[in-house]
Amino acid sequence: MSAGRAGQAGEPATIAVKAELIGQSARPVVRQLREAGLVPRVEWSNVGQIPAGTVIGVRPEGNVAPGTIITVTVAALPPNLLAAVLMPAGPLAGRQSVTNRDRSDYLSL
Image 1: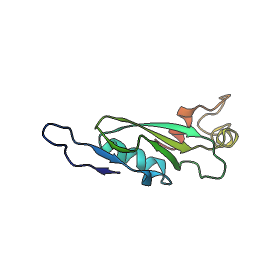
Image 2 (image 1 turned 45 degrees about the vertical axis):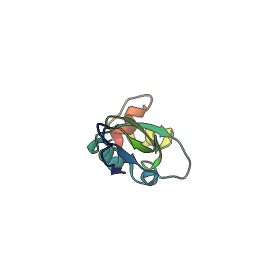
Image 3 (image 1 turned 120 degrees about the vertical axis):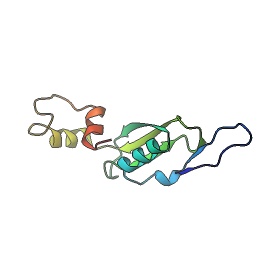
Image 4 (image 1 turned 90 degrees about the vertical axis):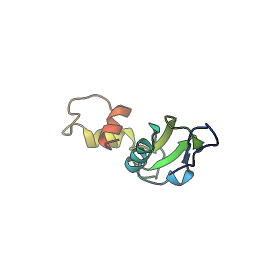
């Protein structure tokens, strides 16, 4: 991701969102997007062998206006493993299920 150049006469500046974010750790990607003036929205996907917390998709890609919502798809811990990590002795002791918000909190996104 990089800051784009200002537009021509009266056009707003744009920010380039690049596919190079894929494969990186979600925490710094989300931070970079926020610092660039974008609004990251994290979605979780259970995808087999990819390490949890890894960015597996961003959309939209390309030049976007400041304030644009960017969906960052992140590999999730499988629900049973996440539950084992967070329950019963972890911070969610006594809970019956794990939510997407719990995933974000676990990775400090």
